Structures are given as C-alpha cells and as structure tokens.
Length: 72
Image 1 (cartoon, rainbow, N blue to C red):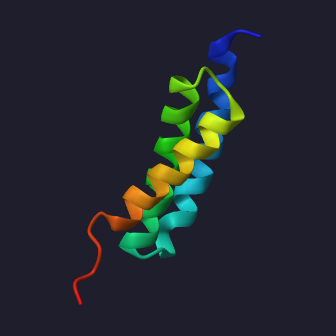
Image 2 (image 1 turned 60 degrees about the vertical axis):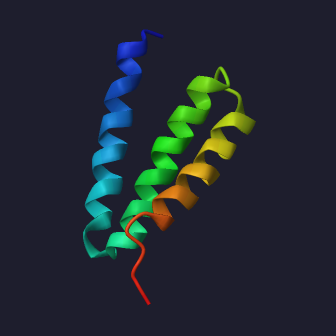
C-alpha cells in the first residue's frame, strides 16, 4: 500500500477526533493532544513497535495534562 493512501483515513479520523474536543476543558484537550503526539513520536522513535507507541502516548498524555494546569 502506498503510504500516501494511508494519510486519507488518518486525516479523516483526526478531524473527527478534534471536532469532539469542542466541549472539552483546556486541560482535557491538552491531555488528548499530548497523548496523540506522544503516540506518533513513540512509534517513530521505536520503529513502529506497539510498546513504543503506547509508552509515547502515556508520556505525552502526562505532559499534556501538566501543561497549563489550573493554579490552586
């Protein structure tokens, strides 16, 4: 399969996911975006392994959650 063909369903899924973010709080949205970016980064760095993808999503989600955390 041509890698460019894989981008079409990915782009459609991304638009669908981000449209669901409209009712999220800023912190929830940052967590979701961090997890997504972390998953992509983990997959790239680990050569596409599932463990790298899951680990990257976990780390990215935590970082995204802590960014712009509400002050107490």
